[in-house]
Image 1 (cartoon, rainbow, N blue to C red):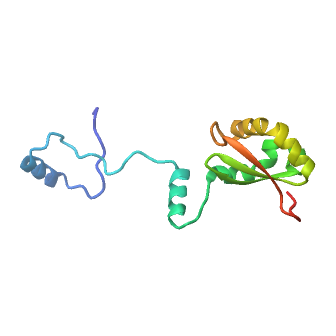
Image 2: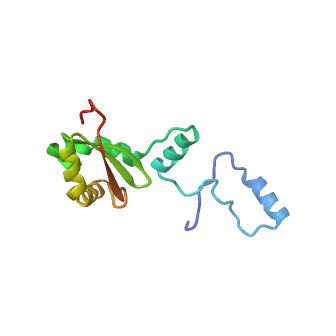
Image 3: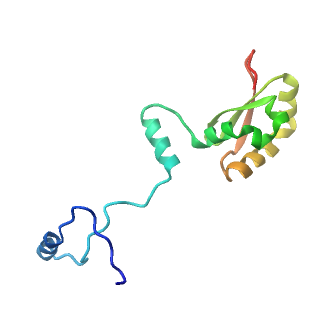
Length: 136
């Protein structure tokens, strides 16, 4: 039968008919008790932020797949940090690598990350010198 909807658990049809007549409702069936489904990443981000935990699914994915995104050579000298409002912090070992990446690498790296993780994941990159003793 076209237009037929399944009823939620615990739904009492006869009670609904009485309420419909009493309130003079037009729709013969109640609306579903749920909204449109949300993305798991959005729900998780919101839930963790309520408890003061800053977590980004995109940040985690970039960190986990860094070698696949940028290649082994660059991954030996640079490591991703936090992703805040579309700006990814990248920690670079050595001043020569830092100068080279600042000069030529930001646009190419943003394009590679967005091609791998989805358009709009990263807007810009902030290259930073890695703390002493830090090895990517």
